[in-house]
Amino acid sequence: MTKETTVEDLPGVGPKTAEKLADSGFDDLMSIATASASEIAAIAEVGTGTAAKVIAAARSALEMGFETGLAALEKRDLIGKITTGSKEIDNLLGGGFETSAITECYGAFGSSKTQIAHQLAVNVQLPKENGGLDGTTLYIDTEHTFRPERIQQMAEALGVDPKEALSKIFIGKAYNSDHQILLADKAKDIIKENNVKLIVVDSLMSHFRADYIGRGSLADRQQKLNKHLHTLQKLADTYNACVYLTNQVMSKPDMLFGDPTQAVGGHVLHHAATFRLYLRKSKGNKRIAKLVDSPNLPDGEAVYEIHTEGVRD
Image (cartoon, one colour):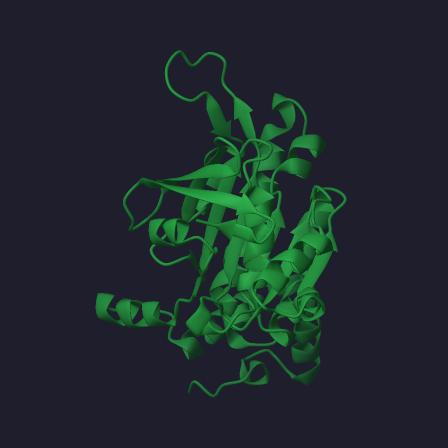
């Protein structure tokens, strides 16, 4: 097979099956190659054996085997960075928030998690030379904290037309954890058609904590959370988009030394996030961002401020 292979060319996939797959967002080889056999079987109404063959053929057409470290390095050239408006935070993150990665920011109330979400939603629209990606934003709002007025303020400060800035942000309000998962599952069409380069989930754990109460439901919660995070990572990889998650914290009163504040979500979330930032409030408008986890950057801290104009040094 050649790289020009289409979905219809795959063995076991005819025009009707291709149409069913496309209606569910599986309209290119990459989306099929990264799907599970059960997903394809349910959508295409075929057996799991046939579905597995379809996936294998898609992977073969894309040459999804091993590659050299040099090839991986060349792919890194495609990674984009979104500025936060603060050079301190950008430097901490090696140039800004990365595409094809999940960045989690956790902290107590008022630590600026949502402020950064709003700022990124404006900054991603900027030209690449100004720290943006000429893209748009998909914003999953679980705590009803999205404020269009805040976008207007931040856009005006950057000389961007506020109405145009708001027209490039697609907001989905999630009313429970299942609705949140569904919004992410159905996001493919919006992302593809509108050049979405930033996916925000603010906040990730709010509904999961409310819907799954007690230790007895913890295993179910973590299983659903894991699948949700895999969906978000897949969107990040497939469309070279940045995924920004805000997360809540809990206090560990049994800690005798150090900061008792800890992010919720457990190991499932902590392993899924590529970059993890701990945000905390300081005096006045000042905030402190601490890089807790990164695959390639040293731990460090950045001091920044929150103003009417947005996130600044």
